[in-house]
Image 1 (cartoon, rainbow over the protein chains, first blue to last red):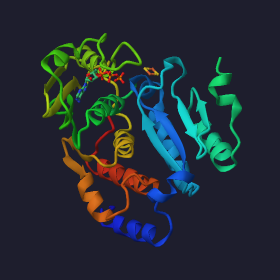
Image 2: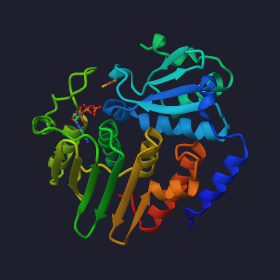
Image 3: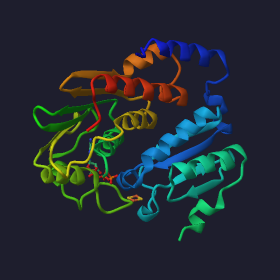
Image 4: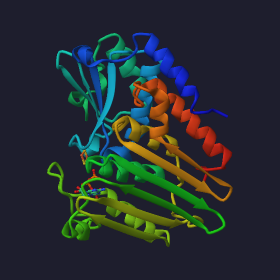
Length: 124
Length: 183
Ligand SMILES: Nc1ncnc2c1ncn2[C@@H]1O[C@H](COP(=O)(O)OP(=O)(O)OP(=O)(O)O)[C@@H](O)[C@H]1O
Ligand code: FES
């Protein structure tokens, strides 16, 4: 059985590496914003959020911050995710699911290539 | 909502929005009593009597982007549909407390679902908040207090993906040990 004590090891490990994000590197951070209002949650925003967290952890992406917001405003296109790069370019992905998240992480967050087919511009 | 844990996430997001710095979430499932109970309590801004009166009305919301609120009426309706009960009380400046009960064996009762994910989503949404999550079954109880987690972590944030992944396993293991979250 796991014990909370094990967190001390995670803490030690993170403090030893340069893993901790400081305020000073806010400028180099790409933000992933998941819409989590009632309609987003009902449409499947929770597994989308958790998949982002899992992928960011598994791939060790240190400059990606996964956050949440309320209503993004287009119910029928939920779950909606916005990716905002350090330079302020915003991409809105719609009708997301865990598989699409894997692709967005791989192509957009890792290789800097927007996944056009999932963007709001291409929504039917 | 397909899972009760999604209703919990939705309602607790209201507590986050209300500026709470402590949110208590408890789930109790009892085959013996034939009930699934959910309590969500926060110390956020609370609501005026007028807001409280209208909050169970599906056409009420204080937000401006959309004209209808959904979360609370949805959960209330679910308790009515499953022969349960629903109570909400709130005081401006003090906080809000909500209790929803469903009859466990009712055919329309959704499963509890992935409650662990709900808890980690909330921690990730607002890591500065102290969450106290309790889960009770006929065979035992488990509590996670994020203050205990923070004490172990020192300056490392509870919202670090690595910590969230660890907490996922920790909560799942503890739920397993009390046979929780399976119904
Ligand atoms: N815990 C709380 N503390 C203070 N105010 C609350 C709380 N919960 C709900 N409210 C108030 O009640 C209103 C209705 O809540 P409800 O969950 O039904 O819908 P919503 O939050 O407006 O929209 P949605 O849940 O769809 O995102 C909220 O806009 C808010 O003003
Ligand atoms: S209420 Fe549906 S997108 Fe905001």
